[in-house]
Each structure stands twice: as structure tokens, then as C-alpha cells.
Length: 389
Image (tube, rainbow, N blue to C red):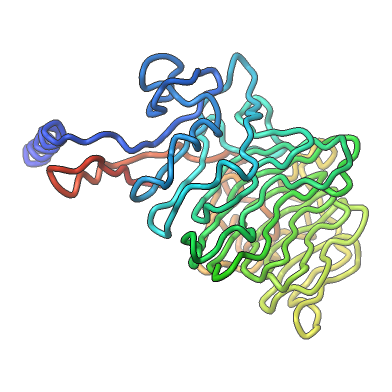
């Protein structure tokens, strides 16, 4: 480290020490922790110990999020039990957010999502209930999360919902921004016929903006991805083992999406203009506004996965149904990686689905790294931590 850089670093340390700043996150969730900590460390003891559940972390926000980006980082299990069954169904999502004051939920590298869902890593789960189901809050980014929903009572439930009618202009949702990336949903149970994996609904009065899903897996869910709002865009999704893979009850757009191993229809309804480069194995095709056939649609394909029986839905090297048939940059700069964080394209052309063959081995996310931006004035009450990745 050069002398000038050392001096700058020392000055920064003294500056921060002189300012009455309290840390504004990131906040950690460790299932082995107990209530009473402030959540600012991934430990299970002491005043800064992690929150014991995602619900506890969310409840700490009060009426609104802190300024800037706020991160919740699930980072640990409880003596081998990695299931977080805390209730994050609708009610806790009542705090204010804005396009610049938003929440990110992203596990650390050791708990980042895998496919099939890895029960030795942190995962959200509920039985006979919705799991992560939004309410008023409308600026949330979910990345690298595992969700397992179990339905035994025959009632319709949703594993993950973003947009809904409670999000209105009056509560700050005129420009909603809901994002889901690199996330896997597993549906289980003896009577799950009406269960939905990923879902979005119409917003309330004056609500607007967007919700985007990218690099997602849903398997064994009767309905993989469903929406009756045009504000949804989905790209590079893989749905396996569904009755209905993608359901367009409104004209939302779907690009580079794969439906396989189902019992019914892969693409149901009339999708929005721009829907393109999707693929299915059921032979029912895809329709978009017009009505016309979806662009570059691949119907009645045979897909080869690493091990579909165990739900390892990474594309195999012998696949000829999805490899190198995708559209490059389908959401205009929103993402350039795959479910495992590997760079697209892995070969010469983007693949269809959540996995990109030929890039880095299946591996998961990158642990968040941060730099300190600092306080805006000597009287500030917090400083911001900006992610490097």
C-alpha cells in the first residue's frame, strides 16, 4: 500500500470514528441465533447477533426502510436445521420503500440457492400457507433464495408473490420495482393441485412500475409461473414437472423460458408482444397478442438435463432442445449471468432456461462485499454500505 493510500485510509478511519454514525446494516439471519440482537453480525451471541429468522429481520424496520439499499443476508443454520418457517406471508410487508430506498434479500455464498433445493443450506418453507407473499412494500429484490412450499389441505397457495392489489400510488408504489433472480422453488405435499410457484397480480389504484423474474427454477409446482398483470417480465426460467408451466392471464412477456416434464401445457394464455425464444416438450406451442404464434418458439422439443429424476435441472452437454437457442440480453441489461452466477453465453449463444451450459461449473452466488460511502454530514445518524457485486 502506497504512502498516499495509507494516509487516506487512516484519515477515513479517524473520520468515521469521530462521526456519531450507527450502522445501517447489512442485517444477518442465523437460525441458531435468538431474539435480542441488532442483526449486524452473523453470530449467535452478543448484542450484534443475527436475527433468528427472516420475519424477525423484516419486523425490525418499523414504518419504512432506512435510506439507500438495505440488505438481509441469511447466513447460518441451527445445528443442521436450515428451514426457516417464520411467517413472511403478507402481514410483515407493510413498511415503506422507494426506488432508491429498497430491500435486498440475498443469502451469503454458503447458503446461496442450488438446484435441486439443498436442505443443508438456508431455505424458507411453510406448510398449508403462502410462503413469501407481498403486501404494501413494493421495492424488494430477492436473489439466491431457496423456497419450499408444502400443501396437504388442497387449498390454493403461492410460494412467492411480488405485485398485488394492496400496492397503490398512495403508499408509494407508483413506480414499483420488484425483482427475483437466481431463486428456486420446490412444491411438495399430497394435495397441491392449485399451488403456484412464482406469481404476480394487478396493482391497486395508481400502482405502476415493473416486476422482473430472471434465472429462476420452479419444479413440481402445478403452476410454475403465473400472472394476470402486464407489468411482469420473465427471462431464462426453467419450469419442470408442472401441470401448466407459464400462465398468462394478462399479456406479460416471457423470453428464453423452458417448460419440461409436465403433465399439461407449457405456455397457457396469450402472452405479450416480444415474447420470444421459449421452448417446451408438450407440443402445444405459444400464443402472443394478435393473436399470433410467439416468436422463435421451439415446440415439442427433447431436453436433456444432468439428472431430471433428482431435479438436477442443469442442462447436459448432450442437450439439443435449449442449448444455444436463446435470445441475447433478453431484459436489456438486467442480467448477464445464469442461476449459478456463471457468465452468459457459455458457448456462442445464450441458452434457454435458468442454466447456461458451458460456462463456470454449477456453483452459486458470490458473498457480498462492501465499501463505506460515509455520512453526508457530521450530524448524520447512519452511513451507507454499498455492495461491490
